[in-house]
Image (tube, rainbow over all chains, first blue to last red):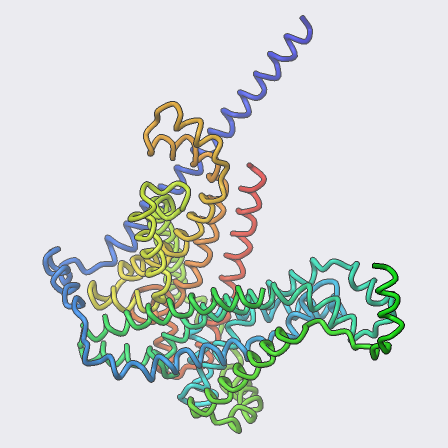
Length: 273
Length: 283
């Protein structure tokens, strides 16, 4: 009898908790929808110049200008495409070099002086991730002038955040047993690093770097917009001369490049890891 | 057997002590060849891209003077003006709407693009994967430029650009999440004769709801970072202020805007981490 009443009380409690959770959830849903409606009102309905936009047919007509491919542009795309890949590769590798101190300072178990170096590394990672590559590109174009170097530097700085964060986490999750083992057979610090630490973290770091390389191809394809060469520059020129099929061609070329990057990264990943 | 090996050991000279290596002969050769090819490619690309190395090594002093002379001190009064603050508010709204629309489109895309749940592995699955790849591969600034060209300046172009960006981003993560579900409930609901949609709603969705919410919050966070620059090409928000000041070489204002972007991204990161932890706990 007593147990039955406890069960009933438990059921009541669970039901009450469920009603409460449902109530809280519906409040969240209501807030999400209310904010969406408000945002649609201010950003889309109020901010758009509907008279200038015209009818749906007008919009479709201007979108239709992009249909079609400008085959004549194709031979001119080879060199910028190679440039784009090269900028992405160099940027990623320079990013790896810049990363080393950030990884060293940013992993809690190896950082030399936690109260100073750890926040410093975190600041580096946040700076790198929160500023967009376009802005980094502008900054480096101002610093070193127009050309591929600005793009390489922008991509390097932009890659630091992601690579350093993932690698520092990998080092923090290190298994200490191999380190002990190498030390126990008389290995020096350098040998401990080469044979105990590196084999553990290298697959993770290589995977992250290849992933970042893929992302960097995507980024380097637009750095031409701020004067760093590559496909972005061709894109910008085609757009400014109102050659809309040419714009489509450049976008298709970017897609092909990214597909190429995905295929390469698949095979490199399989070969190394 | 035993006597033969001992006899062999007696007749053969003792081999010289070998050095231990991690990589034996063929692998070591491949490794070196790969490394050399990579180095060759690197040096060739430095030549091909015409990178002035001396400028690279002189850069550090110049960047230092550039920052101290021109970008410092940031003119913080500029970013506390009501005009700028309202543009920050616009940016947040744009990111919110872009992430919301993108996710609404990404849920069916994740369904069609997950190998275990897709309605047709031969047609729908590759198509959904291809759409996700295309929307993700084209950079958000290119989407912004395209939509500005078609729809004119304004935040609608920005919202649509962010939507396209979020479709690919969330669609891929959603598909991966659906591929990792437990197929038991799916089988159970399928065996009652339910339609594919009912299987999705009652078998799959309860399993991925929490993960989807987490991904949604993360998508908003990423969309906000992208939203800070879509305005650079005329798609509304604070990017427009950035562009204007870059073109007018108001460098102290540019640095103030950058500082404000960094602070906002930090806040949005903290909010998204808090909300994701909250959602994971409510599981």
